[in-house]
View 1: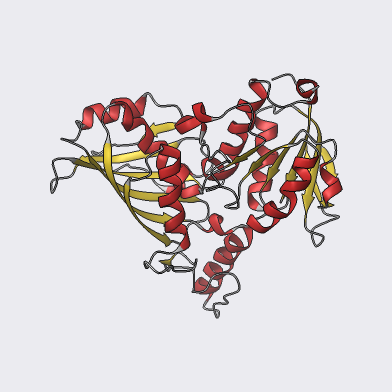
View 2: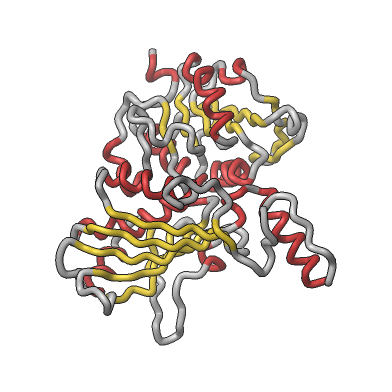
Length: 345
């Protein structure tokens, strides 16, 4: 990728924004000029990129003038507010929020799952919910050997999914708990250290919280299976940055053999099988943290249902669940020549 692009990050000071900077350096992303955008409260801060100190700017509509590619990671409200400005300046946007994911005209993409559905007309591309992205990295390869009819998922979600402030609160509460000091709650609704609780998003009329509802809807859209039976339970656990998920997959007929499942996962990009029964070594968030791959293991037949298998997965929420998928999308768009001002002339 030899194009030199003007790139903007909206939400640069957040946990995902910081991962973008690290990934740009590690992957030699073709940035000629990098614009760091955040709220007025964060403006004036400096961040290091390729050895230089860059000042964070307060986001405004004019900030997208001359920008080729923008990564939005500042929440749904900000995405809705600033997408029209980016669109006005003919900027391609990869949005990490929930703002546009279920819009019929906006592609919702994980490159390894449904990248072939992305077209050159897309100027706004939605990056899916982190839990859904990690889940589908493990599920999508199975479609090569069998068709599934129902998915049951229980999640163990890390603090990073709620942002840098939640990660710091977990650190602070853990230290206070171990020191015998009172626990203070500023970000999460319950004590986070040494505890777990239902995902802290609103409950709908069906009894599902918003996170669970997102995973259901987004998986159906990305798999192009609008009637897929899927049941999800999302739980916050005191882990800093990797999500884990317990998954049972029911198929239309007899389940494929574990050997076939293992083989197809072993040959899937972005997936690493960790399934050492003898040493009780399976996917763990500590192992997944900082890793590009989604770890998959605990592969076994469901003894209660001959049409089902079960597995356990872990993936870094800030990487494959957010920043890395967005960068993969950007690399695909760049490689196909859909971004870069010389392409639009």
